[in-house]
Length: 515
Ligand code: XMP
Image (cartoon, rainbow, N blue to C red; front, side, top):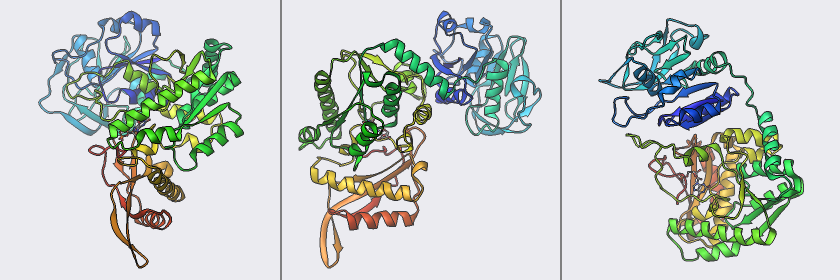
């Protein structure tokens, strides 16, 4: 594996994904990791991430100086390089002015790290401090106009540093540099592939579970669906899936999912109709946080009751992914900039987001994967494209897209309007370029006119965003013709709606969902 030591960079996950895109397994660890623990991982190479600090800051994140003598190739990126220089006896200069943006790379030594990188190709800079004098045994490999030591190396000790960020797309040869490091310098083989992952995961599941029974809460999202397919392929009917219909799914979705999993792929799925239970609990509740909490609590109740009825089970399968593992490992640094420090904005409730004190042992075969890797695994296991490429859908479903209290009438209106939004976006060929596209129902009424009659009805909001990870988002510039078509259809086909509006708010300051 390639190990990434995280110094609080917003790009640590991106570095890990870049390495994996080259079919080499990578994992992120805290910069404070003990040297012996690090040895146990047997890394073939180490990448030191960037970070918001200066090495001279009080409490600046450091690493065990023993890593320089591990005999494993190391590359420091940005802060990681400055730390290397600082700890090995060179001098880091405090910045008068930060350098930010693109710069042409002037290469003076194109062997090793910079092999096959073009002269004057663009690299992405984002740093304050820089290197003033190199530690003994180091040479300069490249510079930029503002940064004399843009890439450095101690060839004998296999220590490298780059001041720029090879992991971001703006560094045009960034992937070449990463490939040079992991293949040529560290000697990694490209053996992190979907096929090998599936084979190893299946062995691991068999070993862990034996002939015991496993329960899975299926939501129809890509994670739980991939998990269901993987487990079903491995342990067949030792797997029981539970599908709790809270009544907040999109039009036709429960039927579609049951048909697919049970009738087409022969998984054992228990459908639990809890619609009335959920909607009655929400009656008269207007506060978004309260709605979310009620739904979350009720979900756990139903889950507990039903798992008792269907059980006993020894294991619970969960679609935990690698980003969840990194977050919960508490890697988020209390950095100056406050980056990556989790702040509670909304209480998220995942279907399958269950409390920790349940009486189950956990099976979490996807916990080493990033989302795009889960999609590849799902695809390889035969999961239909319709599920593999789904837009994210929140656990509380349509209940948080009806502002205020939820009623049957409003649910029906929203379901029909939402169906039209998604259908037209698919027809227009835009579905796969968009992160999420959906309708929101506002609990106010406005006046309209249809035929010769005055109407007084609800507005529907079209919410459509592009995003990389849901943390930030921009509103999608849908073509006017498409908006017109969606608007006409909703007003004509959905009774109870007389107006359609388009949300042009990015995140931040807005959130993607309206509640
Ligand atoms: P916001 O509204 O916070 O949403 O900008 C960011 C992303 O998270 C999804 N979301 C949820 N997902 N349970 C989930 O599993 C939830 O309770 C939940 N709330 C929001 C949202 O759809 C978007 O993709």
